[in-house]
Length: 108
Image (cartoon, rainbow, N blue to C red; front, side, top):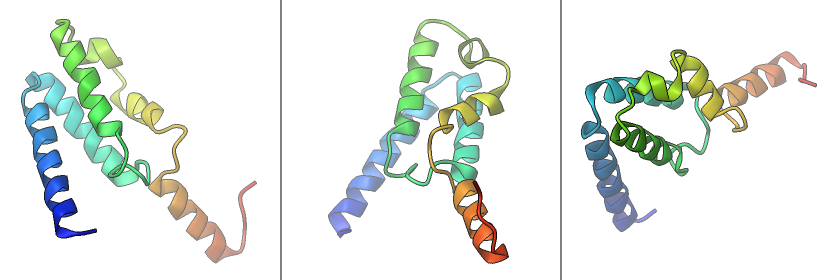
């Protein structure tokens, strides 16, 4: 990764953050909680993927339609976040695999 890639990545991240800050306050709060969760246990390819961009797109559409964020995603924010990554390899999966290898057992 060259310096130009790093600069471009920062530029894209700043634009992403600006989009989040333009959302209504309730959307911002829910987005930040989902983002925190995804950074902790989310997909291994989160940084390279489009999940966060797609989430902001979805939230922008919901806000434009006049719906509250909980009307859009439901009242169980954790379940919504889990559903976003249900088919992705997560850091929790990586951790579980490492624990299984250390203990000499394997998942089936």
